[in-house]
Every structure is written in C-alpha cells, then in structure tokens.
Amino acid sequence: MTNDGLAGYRRVGGPAGNTIVPDLATALPVQADGGKTYTFRLRSGIRFSSGALVRPEDFRRALERVFVINHGSGPAAFYSGLVGARQCERIPQHCDLAQGIVTSSQANTVTFHLTAPDPEFLYKLALPFADAVPATTPDHTVGPAQLPATGPYMTQSLVPGRSWILVRNPLFRQWSSQAQPGGYPDRIVLRLGVRPAAAVKAVEHGSADVLLTPPSASRIHELATRYAGQLHTGPVAATFALFVNTRVWPFSSLAARRALNYAIDRNTMIGLTGGPLTAQPTCQILPPQMPGYRPYCPYTINPSPSGAWTAPDLARAEQLVRASRTRGAKVTVVAGGFGPGVPVQATGRYLVSVLRQLAYRASLRVIGPNTYYQRAGDSRMHVQIGEFTWYQDFPAPSDFIDPLFTCRSFLPDNPANVNDSAFCNRRIDAQTTLALALEAANPDAAANLWARIDHEIVGQAPWVPSTTRAPWSWFPYASATTNSIPSGPCSSTSSGSVNLSRPSCAYASGPPQHAPSPRSAYLTRLPDLARIGPQARSSWRHPDRALCRAARHPWSDRQPCALPVAEPKPCCELFVR
Image 1 (tube, one colour):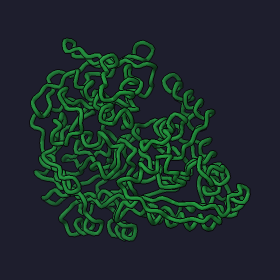
Image 2 (cartoon, rainbow, N blue to C red; image 1 turned 90 degrees about the vertical axis):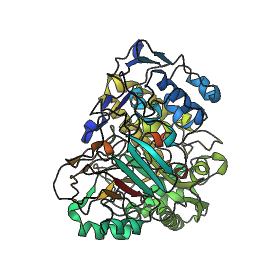
Image 3 (cartoon, one colour; image 1 turned 30 degrees about the vertical axis):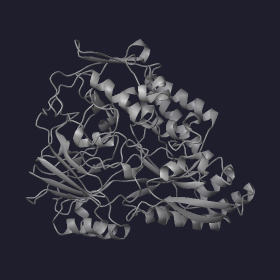
Image 4 (tube, rainbow, N blue to C red; image 1 turned 60 degrees about the vertical axis):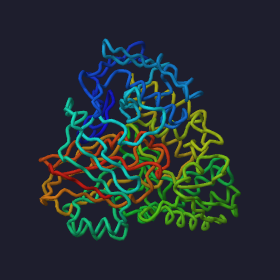
C-alpha cells in the first residue's frame, strides 16, 4: 500500500494469490550460477513520494539497514544466505553487502549473489524488509512519515497508539495492477485503541461501516445471527498453540508433553477465543493452507485416518503422566497481559485447571505484553509453558519449521530466540534440509516430506497446537451481493463482496481475539486499499510494508499494518485496537 520491493504477490484471490510477480522490477529473473544468482532490471522513472528517483542501490541499502537495526538477528535471518551477510550478523553496525548485492546505475540492475541456492529467495524478497528505501536513509529506526513511499499512499501522520493517517502519494503512477494496484480513497484514517464494545456500537449506529476483527466472544453469535448476510470469515495461515519447554522439568519428559496434548479440550479453547466462527481445532504445526499439510491428529479420543480432532482423552493423558513420573511437579503457566478482548489470561486459567487435573501443582503468571515474548524465548528464564502464535511470512512449510523447530533456530540465553520449546532433533533437521533441496526440482516430493516432518514434530510434542483461525469481517451496511474477496499468502481468504450504500467512508475494527504474533513479519491481517473500488472488491493480503519492517519485535512497539474495503470515497476511517 505504501512501499514496494522488486517482487511482490499477485493481488488476486485463492491459491493464485501465492504467486510471486514483478513489482518494481520489469520481470522476474532467471536463476543463474546453479540458483545462486538473481539479476533484476528496475523499472525506469519511478519516484519516491519525496521526489527522488528509485535507484538500484536503494535495495541494497534496505537490506543493510535490516541487519543494522535488528542487530543482525530477527528478520535479518531471511537474508543470511547473501554473500557478506555472515559478517553483517557478526558486526551489524558495519554491515556492507556490496559483494552480495551488486548494483548498476547504468544498466539499472540489481544482482543478488547467494552462498548457496535458496528456492524461497523470491518469497523473501517479497517481504517488506526488502522494500526500497533511499540510499541516504539513516541507520536507525525512523517514523513512517519520514520514510518516503512508492505506493499509492503515504503516511501523513502517526500518533502511536492513537491514529494513523494515510493520504495520496501524488507521485504514484500504477505500473503493475497485479503487484501494486492504485487505491481509490483519497484519505484514510485509522483510529487505534478503540475498545470492543465501542467498535461494535460504531458499526451498529452507522458511524463506521465495517468491523474487521471479532468483538468479544459473547457478541459474535448475536451479530452472526442479526447480520448473517454481511458476516464473512475465512482461513488464515497461522497456528495458535502452547509451547512446552523440552529442556525444563516436567516437560523434558516426552510422555508428559504428549499427556498435555491429549488432555487439552480444543473446543474449550475455541470457545474462549470466539467460537467456531473464528477458529477450528488442530493438532498440527502446519496450517491447512500450507503446501505439505496432511490432516493428522494422534491426540484425540479414537484417532481416525481423517486426521480430525474430536475430543480430549483424559484417561490416556493421566496414564502418560503416571508413566512419566512427573505427578506433583510444579508448573507455572505464563500468559501475556495483552488487555481487553485478548483472552490469553482466560486460556491460561483453563490450562492451569487441566494441569491440576493431571496432578501437577499448577499456577498462572501474567507477564506484561512489552516483555512477554522476550522472556518466554530467553532460556535463562526457564519458562515451562506459555502461549505462542505464528503467522506465515511466506507460503512455504519451511517458514513454520525452520525458525521454530530446528537445532540451529534455538538461541540459548537470547531474548530474540523464537524456538521457545528449545526443541532440537538432528534427524528432523536432516529431513528439513532435504525438503528444502527438493522444493525446486521436485515440489511434490518436497510436500510429502514436509508432511512427514510436520507429523514427526507433532509426535515429539514440543507444542500443544490448539487452533487455526479465520479472519472475521462484518459489514452491516453492505449488500448481500456475492463476489470474491481476494486473498494473499500472508493473510486469508474470504468470500462475498462489499457494496457500501452510505455516503461516508468509515471503517471499524475491534481488537484481535488473540495476541498477534510478534514473531511474524505481519502483525494484523487487514484488507488492502489497493483493491478498493467501484466493484467493492477488497484484497486480504500484504499489510502496509513500511510499518511492518521490524514486525518481529513486541506488539506494543509496532503499529497495525494496513486497511480497507469499499467504494471510492474522499475519506476513510478505520477503528482498530
């Protein structure tokens, strides 16, 4: 919506939305040097909103800043395969990628050199971290209003926690309807920090047109009944789970980890977070939209070939606890204090009750949202169990497996660690390496191997996966005309169109029903302005790239990422927590 890279995702619905298309590049490159070299030719004449031309060196500057600002970790891991990246990881303040990213102003080209083939490199270049920034951009974080835009909108102002105002980029011209369509509203206002009840009331009373995230669980079914024709849900590629620390007693015992997987009532978890309109049960790491997903659930009463979870098996769970000799162990459940509308504490209390049923001495500890994920990931804190959510960064199974469950992903004594379970299995690591190597030459074989890896990790039980989620949108003033709301790899799929009949253009969103994952490159899944138009089509895909650059940091330190839906209007407002 505001910024662009050399490549992006096609802005259409369904599986085609996972397709990489050229954005600021004229075409996608043909791999050279055995898949280790990619050369892009930049489109001519494109300018930032500041008036400066977009130049080849702007793309190198963008990735060097990723290493500097993130101290060589976090999203920098996506680009660790670039020549010179290892030195940037060691000494990020002096990051120089001139050998790995070679630019030519005369030829208007950008050439990337990798140390080894990476079949997912184009996906990584489509992430917002690789968006062009002027070569003069400083080595520290700058506000979105200070960062010039290439897309149809630019930031006019941002008041953290209160509002974000977007206006037209007067220098934007549409160069690709697939990668960066032009927007229709002239001004967009996002209001942050609106409480759930107020957001619902705004939509009901006509001061806002659309609620993009669920209200409190107690109101979802009421609204679904009253506005059945205007309620839209769809799957999102994310897994909501509990992590269990495989190196801290009692969950260093495999039997104890499996016991908890058997004992959790996933329907109860769904009820606590909004009901079946917003979530479905799962026992797996990979979400259903992911290549390589094969339904599988051994942790249910009467497991079947369908792979469906049906009910908890408490008797089997108790048997495993006795076998593990962990009865009576002290267990502290950590939960994030994410505020009203985010029922992490409610699920934490439920988890404590289950652990007590299994004869553990369980208690709940609430950690503030500013530090929750750092403390949960830091092995020095010896956290035993807590909440964990992961949204996909790009549509590949490795995005769920590699950063979360490989031996190399575990960073001891490091708050940036996202392998919170401290899980390491060398055999699974070897299979992961093989699956990555197979992706380019034999994608079907790779998908089958990813499915096996997924099932084997489930068997090792470093997580207690509970649900996959659906985005939720409510359009009380929309017509019942059926159409498609396109999707993208980083968000969701929904069906139905929105034709707002009111002359004003206001949007409302309640808070998310679960804490967004700070570990994902995208924090919220809001519609994209690029598809707002007279046909009332909206695109559920890339959130605003500029504000999501460092999205692997705590939620409180970042802002929601993007917006829209509807007809061309002079001004649009979105209420979002």
